[in-house]
Image 1 (spheres, protein in one colour):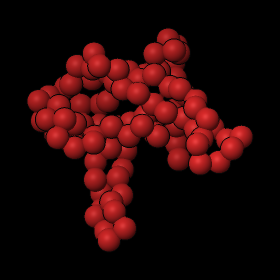
Image 2: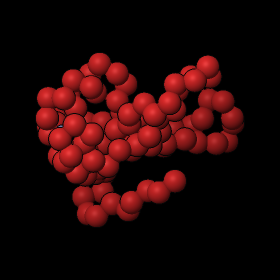
Image 3: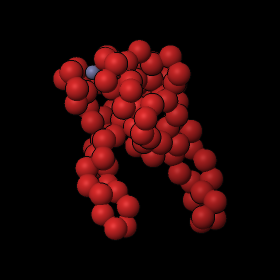
Image 4: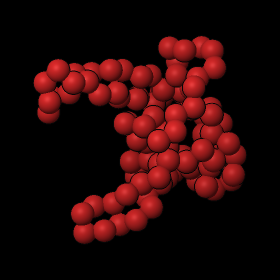
Length: 95
Ligand SMILES: [Zn+2]
């Protein structure tokens, strides 16, 4: 499946002079399967800071940690992330 997003760089309200990136998932995403679609709708399955789908990894007292996924955890299909403002190949982000 393809996941198109729009990347915006916005001023950081918490620290002056700094910016942060915000990734907005486009609405016309065609999910590979209903399971992922359901998961995305039920939980906040999209991470605006990373521009990727995420699943909850651990839940602790401080909150929860999530991990970005490149493959659908339900059907195994690869998820291709695409920046709509960059029609050509997008660089893979590794953090
Ligand atoms: Zn799937």
